Image (cartoon, rainbow, N blue to C red; front, side):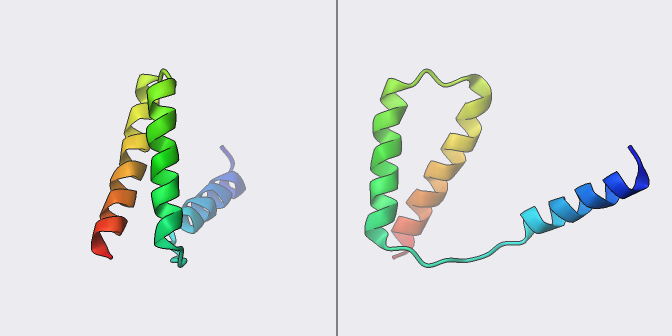
Length: 67
């Protein structure tokens, strides 16, 4: 990998790691969680997909509990 490609990848990683906060309605989060719960029963997840989905559900649950 060339030096400029490494710099580009480092820059992309830094941008990805920056956290931006946005405000959403609680109902929106509840709707997303409901959709994921329905889809979960209908999809045969690959093992490498389980962790990311679980993390998203955990984050949504934590946000809903904070309210």
